[in-house]
Length: 207
Image 1: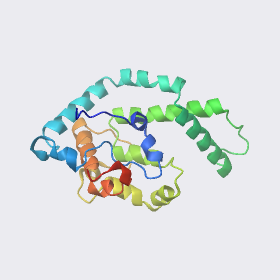
Image 2: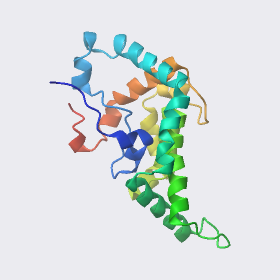
Image 3: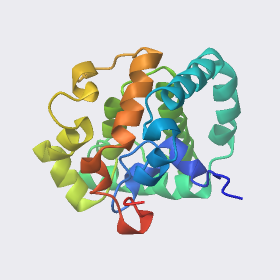
């Protein structure tokens, strides 16, 4: 039917940042999709429609977050496993402190679920996608990702080339963007060849 069906629901909560080759793009807007748009460009109708959707979700973010709160009470199994893994890593590094009691699996899972929902909150508030994505990537357990973050390389890839709208709007601090800036940045990032070229081959970024 050629209908576009979203399948990576869990990645809306930032889970795409934790795989071996992190997904740095906000959504699929590869060259094939761009060519299917009016005049072969996301500028115009697509960007305006995205802005309308973002504006509506911001206005209704309270209801959206209420729905997301279900996941705080009934976390996904993947969240539970990753939350426990995060806690073990922190305990092994000593970052929890030797005098602090070890939290239970339930406490860790609840904390991790709240962190995932917080990602959604930041997106609905209009937080710069680079700020949100970098906060997610810092929780990654993948070795090369940790090294790339420490060297500052991954942040530069996410911000794109000099003169990109992402860089112009980025302060390195938490700030809420206008709907227009947020939409433009999301589209720009999704179409960035520097990001698509660093994507897992099975994702077929060339299409």
